[in-house]
Image (cartoon, rainbow, N blue to C red; front, side, top):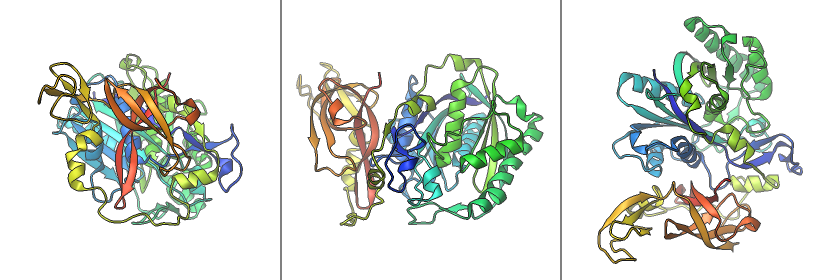
Amino acid sequence: MVGIRSYAAYIPPTRLALGAIGGRAAKEGGPEKAVAWNDEDSVTMAVTAAVNCLRGFDRGIVDSVLFASTTYPFREKQGAALIARALDLRGDIQAADVSSSLRAGTTALRTAADSVAAGSARNVLVVVSDARTGAPGSGLERNGGDGAAAFLVSADDVVATIGASHFVSDAIVDLWRVEGDPFVHSWEDRFVVQEGYTPRVVDAVQGLLEKSGSAIDAFARVCLYAPDARSHAGVARALGVSREGLGDAMFGRLGNAGAAFAPLQLVAALESARPGDALLVANYGDGADALTFEATAASEKLEARRGVAWHLERRRGVANYDKYLKARGLQTQEWEAAQGPGLSATVHFRERDDDLSFRGQRCTKCGAVQFPAQRVCSTCFAKDEFEPIRLSDQIGNVVTYTFDFFFPTPDPPTVVTVVDVCGARIHLQLVNCPPDQVKTGLPVEFEFRRIHEGGGRPNYYWKGTPTPA
């Protein structure tokens, strides 16, 4: 049976209190939303979710990568290929993007399942990530959130089988964003809910129930996409979903994460599912789709994942609304972003093993690890006697650090470190760590982040983050 072999999530630890929107003081303990910070976007979140998903697996088994998002920074450049490179996957895999719809994530899941069932791939990595921005002060800003989910779809050792599905396609001007728009736009809320969201989701779920011969109360958890908490409750009532069976939409903690919203609810449902539990996921966007899953006995054998619950507990509040605006580049600036060719494409190509894959080398003569790659071992002086080693999944330790008050950041200072990774000394920025918590010897792992922007395009590299206890 084709299904999900592994799953994981990534939710930015930064939280914006909803009460702070509009300039009011942020208050701890109230409703909030997860927000990607200044060096995060849909690509970086996708990579981190995928790393979490592939923990404990040989990455060589991945045959295909599907990347689903509505907020990929490039309009003509494949995101799946960039993610595959950052993950240091095989070079002969298939990579494809699924975009332009909030249903992109569930579409990618169904496509991956069909690919495995047809035999064209054995293990497909599906990564869904979004960092949508609503206009400051709008309902879309208040209800939105950022995050990513990742699934390894396979026919081997699946923790949840993928069952029936039903799709409804429609064309309605409810939510949209055209080329160059910094913000998502919405038509009048009542129209969106009454004419678009509610009838289409109900159609999709009822069509699925008829097709599968199931009743709504047969599902241990029903996960529903929704633009806001009120419409989420309204559709649940229309479908007859019980309070106990309704999946947590996480408004007030995460927010609507766009294409990743329904997949993140699926991850949360898988975390608590017991063998035999049936799950239903309904998604919306220019129509709706509904899919069923059933947890297997293998779900109890899968080692703990960094899922939704883990990330929701790992949080830090944004001090005020202005810091959020600055992190998202929404403040008026004295200088326009520099234009031009940016980073040399030749340099980018030559150093992609270092910058994207974070790949070092180990001397086969003496075992010394070096980064970046060079021809002569700095320890035993052997020449061209190296094997590659992936550093992104290692643990390093801070050797020394400094605080940089000049490097652009919404919350100075930038923490700059030298980190020892398997004996190699690497110059890295440190994130998710207040200055007063930095110390020598601090264990760190690594996350894929934006390092700077040049020529109007983002450039990526790896940064250190404290290893969770």
